[in-house]
Length: 199
Ligand SMILES: [Zn+2]
Ligand SMILES: [Zn+2]
Image (cartoon, rainbow, N blue to C red; front, side, top):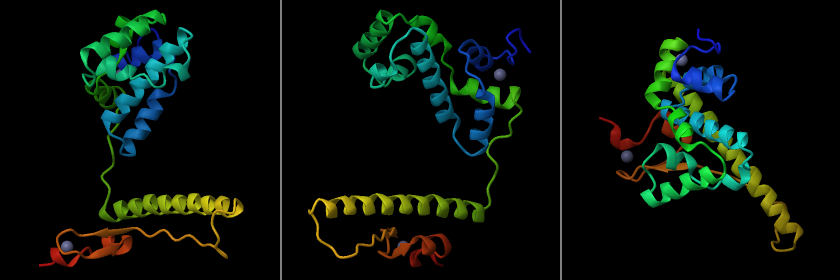
């Protein structure tokens, strides 16, 4: 343990300095749930950037469309774009050098999880657990599509744009095998698959 009560690695130091509490719990749980180190790292860095912007009184809304993270931590943007964003940040009162030095790499996040938190990584899931999870996820999506469509139809009805007696929305999800042309619903997909993989 270091003075600030953190584990002493970069993740610990930076999150303590940026007063980002509960970050360890969040990282630990998300990783266990199967979120990739890469997206955890990106989310953590975005959070650090937001905290830095808030600390200099920059409005979150104003900066929400600026790819600050991309400019400071990736090479996704062109050099002029990167320079422009760094300038804007400086004008807003951000210590850009400090901020970009504080952003963490995914190796650092990985080491923090493994070594400092003793996290074991995502649990190996059995095929049945994966099926169950896939079902839940897609059913939730279907449910949502149906609710949104339903309310859309309802408002069209009210506005007199459509004319239907008693609408009921059905959302079907089908997956087609491009090789054999067979169309499957989710259950078929998860249990039997298509014909062309047999034998
Ligand atoms: Zn650590
Ligand atoms: Zn097939």
